[in-house]
Image (cartoon, rainbow, N blue to C red; front, side, top):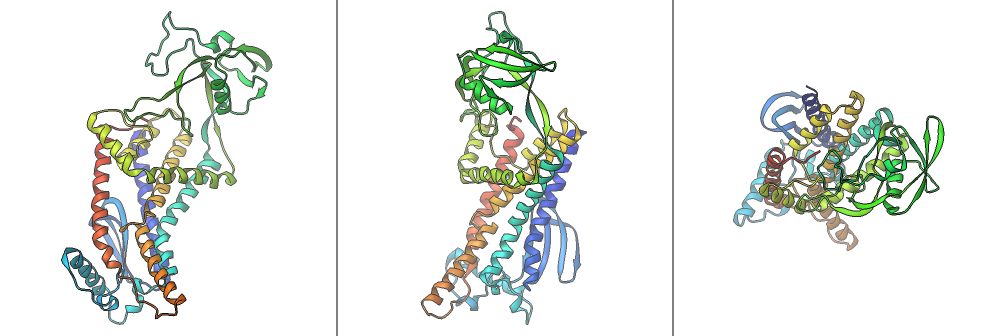
Length: 434
């Protein structure tokens, strides 16, 4: 049941995010006088709709996106010199102009989107992605300030009995396995590590870095035990340990094998505590996730090919592999099924949704139609042409023939659909192991 609750929560909030994204487009468009004929959440057959004023609001069967229909998205043929329709590409552009012109009622040409100035077009097109960024900020603020997140504290929860290789799947120690340095040093569960080698310990991450760098050296350790400080000495053994990324997650190579490096190993595990932050830390967290997402999007073709290769050959997917909507739902379900309190489950769900909204923000800014970034690029090109003409003292040029980008939009749409189906298939037959 908890697994199902997680999936339902994510689906509902994703739908809400889509709805708000489209509101981000619709509100400024109406504010600037553009007639908005439709506001739809989803694609495909209409499940429900109602017309209020001059706009039809509705819900469609496939909840994988949404749209607002702005009249006059493309300038009519006469506004761009009635270019000849040469070949398939020319006919597609001509038909797009004609369909757009048919939506403009008599006497409402001034309300067409193509009539807007470049700054107003940018506001309308950026309204959706910016709304996703605002949603992410709000969700991260709730998680950070009100809920908090589990972080490793400086108290030991368990001490390993032996040293096992980083790639070992064994869960018990054999008589031939060397004893773990932490057990040899006399560390116990419940000890709070106060200092390591003369350095005051403030976080488990700090301690981990010190241990990994002190392999083979004997170090003085100060712990707090039963209210008193106890001096111990420990000698971390040099062994192969997983290579960790900036989030503390083990990195894997192209075959799914965990990357390792020689590093110091003590053999102790932390106790996790719930930690809340201040509202001032939220912008930094959002920026960090956004930067990581930009890096992912910049390498998206390579990552998608990696997903296809690992799924076809049956090798484990990288822990940082891109996922589709099925994968996101599975992560949400596993958070719901985790043995933690509902407060932490809620925080996990909201964190996933914040990351998803940041992904929508970044992805929609790719300068390709039909994404919002494609319309932004077209508006900037039109504005640049007009500014160049003004500086040269020439006649102000008419609107750009953005309908010529429609064939490219069709191609991108088909490509994105194929990638989406690939990710759904991979998430089902070869899911990322969370």
